[in-house]
Length: 204
Image (cartoon, rainbow, N blue to C red; front, side, top):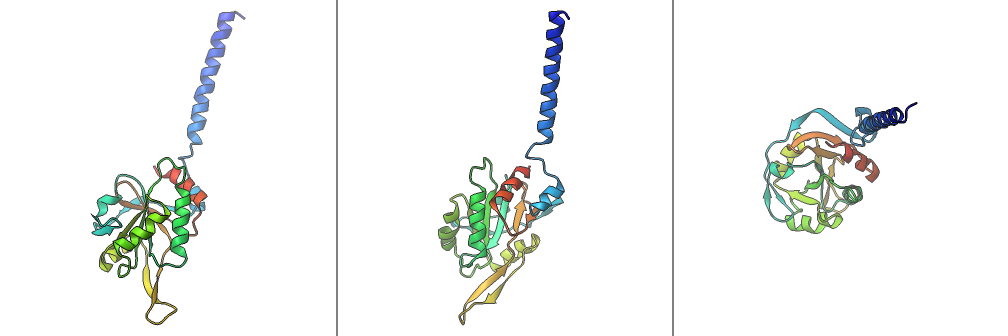
């Protein structure tokens, strides 16, 4: 075979291999996740995101904020409280582990379900302790109920171990809010950092 023809054929073969490689890489991209794979990780993603009503909260820095604070990138919203004995610190610790070494992690937000006790100052001493980038939010009871109801989160006071004390029973699901500020789905408990990192790659 003529040397020039052979080199041309080799070049064509190399080009075809490159194209096929790119196609395979695209098909196997970590950003692609089937609905079944998402469900295996506990991620229930809605086909049509749902509206979250406008709200008026105060963040842990004492700033008045609304729905705009959840726009611009994905957010994971957890409803908890600072004196929670187990679920809240465990969940926030897992979330802190999950965002380590992640190039573009979602915004992590904890909305207090105990506004009577969780002042912005108390949230400031609690939420950023897990990760300086985490955001604590609180508001009036009615405002919190309004937002929680819109994202299918239930909570309520239960008597504590001592007379006059109480805890707050609440869902441990993580609410997924898309960059438009819409309720895009939820991640069921229990949570682990590895699964959450896999889910982050699918948030596009």
